[in-house]
Each structure stands twice: as C-alpha cells, then as structure tokens.
Image (cartoon, rainbow, N blue to C red):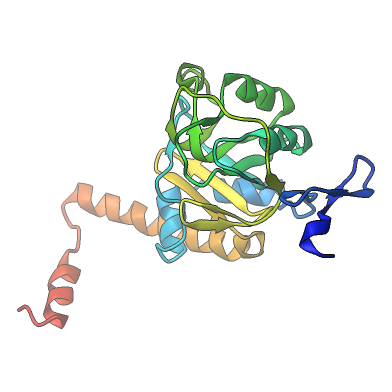
Length: 239
C-alpha cells in the first residue's frame, strides 16, 4: 500500500477500512496478568529503576493528583501536539485498568486532557493518565486520587482535528513505551517495563528492597558500613 492510499483502521466489529494518512488505530492484544502487575507495583519506582540499570524511566513528568500509585498496561496514543481528537477515541477504546499513555511531543502550548476527560476515564475504570504534554483543570486533579502524570499545565485548550495513532510505540520523556508495557508511577516518577521481563524484575526488586531494609536498620543502629566509599576512591587513585 502506498502512503498516499491511507492506513488500515480497525472497525467496530474488527473489520478494516481506509483512513487518511496519519490516522490509525490498532487493538491492544497484549495485556499482562493483573496479579503479576500487582506483585511488581508494591515496589517504589526508584527500586524498579535501579533494577533496570538506572537507565530506563520517564524523565520530566510529575504527578498532578492528590495521592496514590499508578499501575497497569499502556494504552498508547501518539497525537499532534496540542490536539486531542485521537485521545478522545482512545478513551472509548481502552479497557478498565489500562493506563492512557499520551505522546504529545512534550508541547505545553495547549492542554491535552482536562477535568471532563478525567471524569470520563474514572467512569470507564481506567487506571490513570501519563501525558508527555500539558493538562488543565489542575484543581480537579489535585483533589482526586486518579493518577495523572504530565509534563506541565496550561489553561489553553486543545484542538480536535488529528492526526494521531492509537496503540503504536510512543516516546514519553525519553523512554520508548510499547502498547501493553507495564506502567508504574508514584511520587518519584514513571517507569515502564515489557511484560516479558516482569518475573525477573520482581525478583530483582525483592532483593533490592531487602538490602535497603537492612541498610536502614544498620543506619538506625549506628553500624552502617561505609567502607565502600574509601574503596571506590582508592580504585581511582585517591588514598
């Protein structure tokens, strides 16, 4: 198919039809086991990030909601900056428990989601928003436990023209997130992980959390071993 002929779009009953270039919808066929996600979600994002080599994670987004962690599979949207037409469509397609992950290019000139979309997402049982862009109606988000992470805020509303793509790989704060990846968020930020790595990551996080708990006990008892600092400096020629 030549680009000028459009893209295949999933229809209401699974049929396909042609749409203008830049408009495409894929179904989300890869959702991780909710119980496995819950086992990982007990760990704070710094622990998860450390166990991912301290290289994997979203940078530049912050929480706007009152409290509460975020966990669930990524239902992704890539949209033209400042436009939320395909975000609205994604709200209708996402399943309860999904995290709407929105690649708005980091643009802050126009908000992509606001209070009405928040309320609709809550009514549909979504797990939260991750927005690489701006939101508005901050009072509504600050008063709610519905998780929302975004790059910033602005009063100016969005356009509703498109284009956009649903359930494609997106770039959120420097991290490529695939549809169906497990998204975790808390007061420290957002990370995302392939479902294929969950079991090994859960075990690594368990060991890391146990070590940190032991370190806290050692600090409180006054016997925390700090010899690693001198050893590290000695390896670099500082005695």
